[in-house]
Length: 286
Image 1 (cartoon, rainbow, N blue to C red):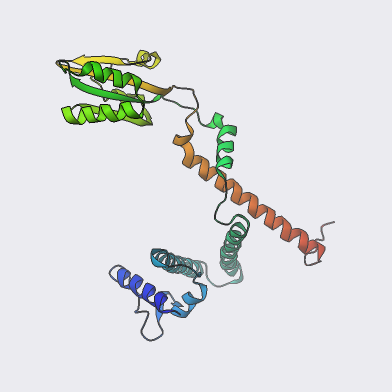
Image 2 (cartoon, rainbow, N blue to C red):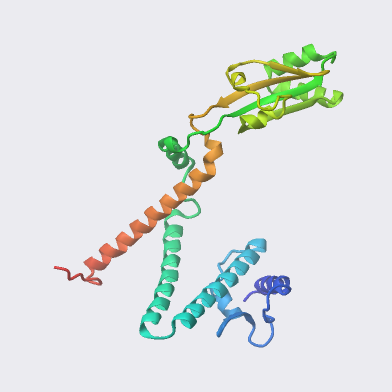
């Protein structure tokens, strides 16, 4: 074991010492963890440590491995304690062990086939386009901008020009003007629910403002000596498709799950076919 790995393990167990009862890994048998009668030694961990891990990645891997080892062994021992050691119960323990080994093989299949990427950007976009019916809005969402200023503000003509044209240069000038004159300027570049946008304006409780969604250009509200200008630059209403950026995580999870299942099934089928051809598996049903 290299010196770096020793340091990683030592630091990890020093950090965990306050919340877990774990023996010192560099004394006696160099035990890293115990679960009942089972023992995880430093040399056991060294044997499975992936090459190339450094820094925080190495520490995280060690922590996860030890935690998983403890959980798995405790679960096996709990099963044995609860269900005994007869043949039927031994089958349960064996099935659980087999399940762990099978999951490890699945991970190997996926890593060997897909490497670090289970999907491409195109895969995600294709899935989204094919499943738009699953992503239907049940409420209106918008993007836009709002500015509040004293109704007597002397530069409001220029401010309105900037607010109407709104490109990168106009946004920069309007922002500078707002900062200089303590104006409340808010640009909403990410989708938010329409009531959240209305909360930026002097709206009345229980009043309906659905008609504003159908208007374009700069709209105005006033309250006392303050004026609000606002623009709804983009909108999606109830029944329309949810924008991709709002469901991207769901899409990624769905595509990844489907891709994993496809890879595992293909590898299982390959093993099955080869075993039949090489007579390593024989089926006698008929």
